[in-house]
Length: 233
Image (cartoon, rainbow, N blue to C red):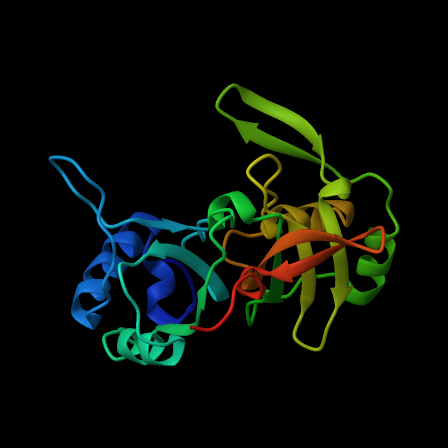
């Protein structure tokens, strides 16, 4: 049985990297008594894969991992069993059984939603609302992106699906697919550069609100949370 687990990661755990989170969940599965499947061969490992890795320092309300299990109780019992062994800062939010033909979490990711806030004492020296409205109207947003081969100019406007001001900060829905992953910090950097200002390394507090799969409905592309795929056990 394929199972998709949604979890939140905040607090001190934002400083734990992706590989350490994988090892953490491998141990949590054993402690929670989850009947997870193992690969075959001389070095068996738990069958587990994660959606888009979260950058160090970012909080998230919508992280996902897929596992394969030999047997299962109910979604609520599995959620409670995992939360009983979680450390502070990590909470399992949902457990869903996936259809047999469902893509894995990593291959499913099309977009991610973020809330960007300005750290206290690091607010921009320009009027955010006025600058944001002008920025949002731009048809082309050019940035210089560093790659292994050097630097290249990139237009990120087509990769920004939604951008709006909220009471909490700036909400961004951006491309998070393997082919065109855009980090929210790059968008805010472009906003700063439009206003002849340099974005500081520690100016932003970024929360990933959720991770989405793309579906076409009535000729339009809609974005659904990854746990909208599947059903409760």
